[in-house]
Length: 461
Image 1 (cartoon, helix red, strand yellow):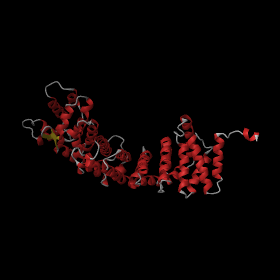
Image 2 (cartoon, one colour):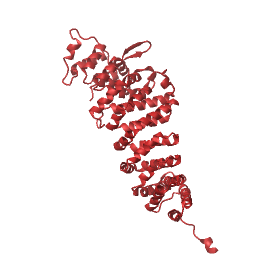
Image 3 (cartoon, one colour):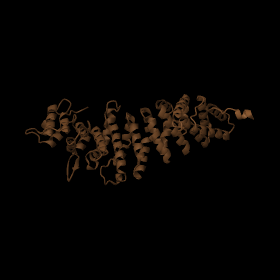
Image 4 (tube, helix red, strand yellow):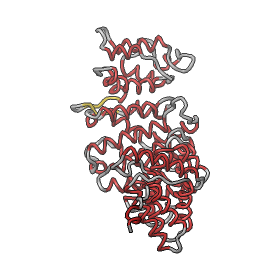
C-alpha cells in the first residue's frame, strides 16, 4: 500500500508513449476511439511532443484505414493540436517549441500531406474543417515543402478546389484561405487550381454574396483570383477566353444610383473595386518579369475594351462620386494606363469618351485627366493621371495628334495629316513637338510642381 502511494507520477513523455501504445494495440474500434479521445484531451491541455515520427505514422495509418467518420475527425483533431503553435494557450513558449518539433516529425512521412488532403473529399463537415485547419497550420510553417508534396499529388489541389462548391459557409470560407495559401508564389499550383474550374466557382460565390449586400468573402475571392492570375499566362488566357473577365464589369459601376452596386455598403464596394482594378492590372500590365507573352497581353487588352471595362475605368477615375476615394482612383488609373498602353482600340475608347464635369457640362476624358494632374497638390496625386496620359501618348501619333488638336489650335499651315508626317523613328511625334505641347499646357505663368512634372515627363516603356 505504501509503495503504491509513493509510486511516481508518470512524466508527460511517458503519458504520450503509453497513449500511442494503446492506440497501436487497440483491439477494435471502441479501443481506437477511446485512445484517440485521451490523446486529443492531453494534446489540447499540454504541450505534447510525439516520441518519434513513428507516432505520426501511426496516426496517419489509422486515418487511411478507417471508414468511420468519427475516427477520422478524432485523428485530425489530435494532429491539429499537436501541430498548432497556439495550443495550449496557457504555455505559449512551450506550445511553439512542441509545434516545431511535431511538424518535423509530421513532414518526415512523405505520405502525410496527401493523407490529409484526401480527407477533403468526404462530405462530413467536421472532417473537412479539421483537414483544412491542419493544412493551414502546415502551410503557414513550411509552405515550400508542402507545395512540393502537393505537386507530386495533383489530385490534392483538385480536392481543395472542389471545396468551393460546399454550401456550408464554415467550410467554404476557410477553403478560400486554404487555396490562397496553397497557391501563393507557386505558378504550377495556381495553374492546377485555375484549370479545375476555380474561376467559375469564385464568381458564383461573389454573385451569391453580392445578392446579400456584399461581405468580406467577396474580397477573399478577389484576392484568390489575383493570386491565381499573377505571373501565370495560361491562367490569364483561361480567365479572359472563358468570359470570366466580363462578369466582373458590373462591379466597377461609378453610378451611385446603379441598383446592382447600390446594395453594397460604400466601404465594401470601394474595397472590392480596388481589388478588381488590381486584377485588371495583373492581366493587362506589362511589368518586367511578369511572364506574360505579347499574344496573351494583347488578348487581355482586347477583352477589356470589348467588355466595357475600359469605359468603366475611365468613369471611376473621373467621376465626382469617387473624388473622396483616392485609393480607388489611383488603382483605376493604374489599370487604365495598362489597358491603353500600346493598344489603339482602347486608346480610341479613352479619347472618344466624354465625362461629366460639374455643374452641367462634359469634356473629353484625356482633358479631364490632364486637369486632375495639373490640379494635383502633390506629386503623389499628380502622377496617376500623368501615367494614364503617358500610356495614351507613348508611341501613338494618333493619340498625340488628337490630344494636341483638342488642347490648342493646330498652327497655321499645319494640318493633322501633315503633322503626322513629322513622326519619330518609333512612330511617335518628335520630342521637340512633345516638349512644345507640354509648354503650351504649362503656359506663361510660373508652373506649379505638378505642371513642372508634366513638362519634364518622358514616356516610360
